[in-house]
Structures are given as C-alpha cells and as structure tokens.
Image: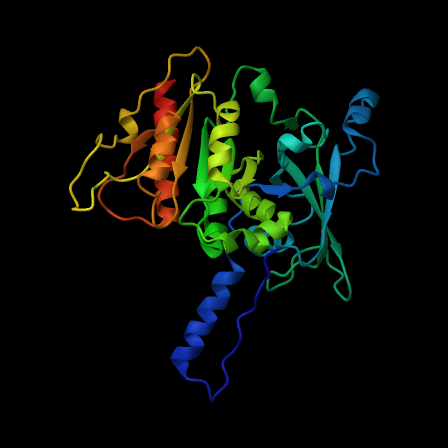
Length: 353
C-alpha cells in the first residue's frame, strides 16, 4: 500500500538546494505512518490452524490463537523493524479490523497488547533480527496469544461499556486527493456511519476515482487512521450518487429523528444583495438533542468546497430536521472543516451523557 523509499545520494552535477528538497520529499514518503496498533484483515490470518473456538475447547494455552505472516516489503514489517526495532519474542499491540459485513467472522475484532513476533530470515541474511540499517531480515510472523491476553472488542459492549462512536458523517465528495487525506482522519477520530454523497457542486467524475474503483484502497485508508488511534472498528461506509434520493428514502431509517441529532454545517444565508436572512446558524454547543432514553447520537453533514447550494439543498436538509451550525466567518477547506466538526461533535456527545 505504501512504499518504503530510500534517500538518493546527490551527484556532483546536481545543485545542493535541489538535492536537499528531493531528499526531504523521499524521507517524508518513507515515514508517513505512525502505527499505535498493528492491524490486520481477517483474510490475512493463517486459518489452517484450529479455529478460535476449537482452541478454547481443547484447553491449549501454549499455542497462539492466531498467526499472521507479513512479507518483507509490507509497510507494517518495515515499521516494526525500522521504527520499533523489535526482536524475536518482543511484544506489540495488534488487532484485527471489524466492520458490520464481517461480524460473524470469529477472528474479527481481536485486540491484544501482547502479540509476539518472530523474524523469518530470507536470502543471504542469517540473523533473525533487523539489519544494522534497520531493514527487515525477511518476512515476519506475528502470533496473537490466547485469552485473557487477547479479547474481542465487542466484550466492552457486553459489559455495558459501549464505546462505539456516537457520531456519523455525511460528506459531499471533495477532490479525490483531498478525500485520500480526509479518510484516515475520519477513522482516526471515529465515526459510526460514513456517507459519501454527491451534491450540486460536486463534479460527477469524482466518483470515477480509484478510491471507489478499488474498494481495498478505501479500506486501506480507513485502516491507516485506525492504526493510529488504536481502534479496530471500521466505519460503515455508504456511497450514494443521488443525494435527494438518499435524504428522502434512506435517511430516516439510518438516523431516526427521535434518536439522532442532525446538523448541517453552513454559514449564515445571504440574499443577492449580501444581506443576512433566515435563522442565524447555531454553534455546535447550542444544538438541541431529542428526548430519548437511548444513547445520544449525532449526524454531521459537511458540504463540498463551494458549500451547499442555496436555497435548494439547505431547504431540503432543513425540511428533514437538520439544525444549521457554523464554525464562524472563516472559509475552511473540507479537511479542516471535517476534523473541526467531528472533534466538536464528539465533545458535545460526551458532555450530553
């Protein structure tokens, strides 16, 4: 997914300043990820061994619950060798991602702080440890231990400690390059549902991006944010090219108005003469929650770079119970607006509890 780039030594004919910029750029690409939990897809687990339930019933404690073998050039292998500098037998934080589509998989949602590693040297390298310059000696086997050192992320919910994100995001598609930056931020902050939608100011060709043509790319970007946060739960992603149809036919089912606060981010409305009219937008801390015994949830709608279209899209959202909020008079890029709004939304939900 991410390639480890080496720093190129400048030749004599290259200007010094040019070489310095070039080296900095390559170093940045090589260290883009900072992993606080090594995450795997359930498809990466070696399932040739006994299943989780089979191991538990047999009472075998010595054998690991599951193992994952990563190739030498995998970005996680490189991170463990170069950044963490781990040796055989060392432990690390690991987990397997979970989303609604694979809740039935017995390996989904595993969490542990005691996974152990074993280096498998390849080629001319004989020592089972990172090389002197920090490169992996070969592929890497990671062993996930038996309970109680490993548990399912759903156990906290069973014990009455449901820490599933209470915030969801409806996002009008930004430019594909910007979307690739936003997705890790979204999963890092934590959302329950992520709706990626069209809007009147969204070019149709944005949906032709490789992010949508290759689902593994979108999933990988979300996993990047999870690895930073230490969580294992992927957002439930919905992609819709028809905003009006989604708002009229699917919105109430996903986000019942008696359970979920709906807010739309947009500045104060103005007429053609620039005069303000209509209700003044609220701040996030001023929104009203519905009366309900269930945990309070929040849906935030963020428009495209040019904002939601007035009055059509704003009126459509308002008719569906959206409260209009603002971050102030400054014009923000989509990535800045998303991070700011999600941070405020989580803060409001935590206080409302």
